Length: 101
Image (cartoon, rainbow, N blue to C red; front, side, top):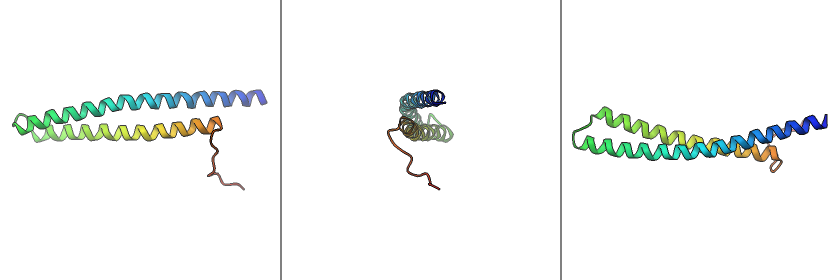
């Protein structure tokens, strides 16, 4: 029974560690997406100012920029949760919010 529990803890710890690593990589990718969407918006805005793009083009670029920023912020929140789960599984922190009967 003790060996099985130990294996389960190790598996959960490995899973949480992999999730934390993946979350960090996702943030890096989404940082680049934010930069690209900002640059795209700047280009489309310049085209719009020179009457080379429509209002729809400008709005589409703005939506893409907002979506990239939102996904980036959500990825940062997901990373914080992943890191918390890793610390909890590793025993670094305890869950103080559980009610005791």
